[in-house]
Length: 187
Image: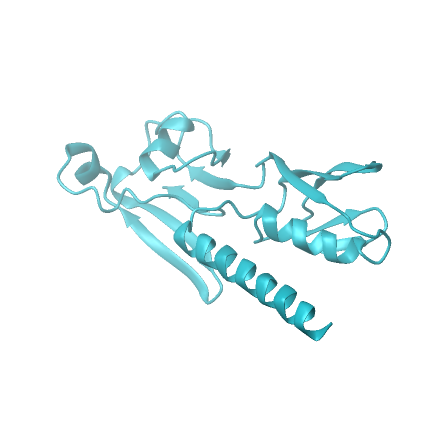
C-alpha cells in the first residue's frame, strides 16, 4: 500500500512541477481580476453550472463551497481550488473554469482627451493605442506632460510619456505597455 501511495504522490509532485514550469515559460497566462466573469461547470452535475463575477474583494461564490479567492489566479488554479473544496461534497468532481468576460482587465485615461474613462485591455495595449481608443487629445491637452500611474504593492510608480519622441519615432521607450489598473493622465 505504501508503494502505491509513494508512486501516486510522486506523480502528483511531477505534475505540479510541470505546471509550475509551464507557468514560468508562459508568463502571459491571464490572471483573473475583479470584475471578470467566469463560467464554472462540474461534469455530470448540471445544477453546479454557473457564471460568476469576481467580486471587488477578489472572491467568487459558488454553491456548496461558498466563497473562493480567485483574483490573481489563472483558470487552472481556480479549477484546483474549487475541486479541492467540492471533494467534501462530491466523490470525484471534475471542474472546468472558462473565462467568459475580461471586464476587470481595465486601464483608465483621465484628463484632456475626447472620451476620458476606462478601457478594457483585451490584448497588449500601449499608451498611444489607449489614447487612440479614447479619441485622442482635446485641443487644450498638454502633450509634453503625460504620465502613467501604476499601482504596485510597495506604492505607486509614475512613468513620463514623451509623446513627441514617440510620434516622431525618435524614442519609443516611453510608449509602455499598459497593465491592469494603470491610469494615463493627460493634463
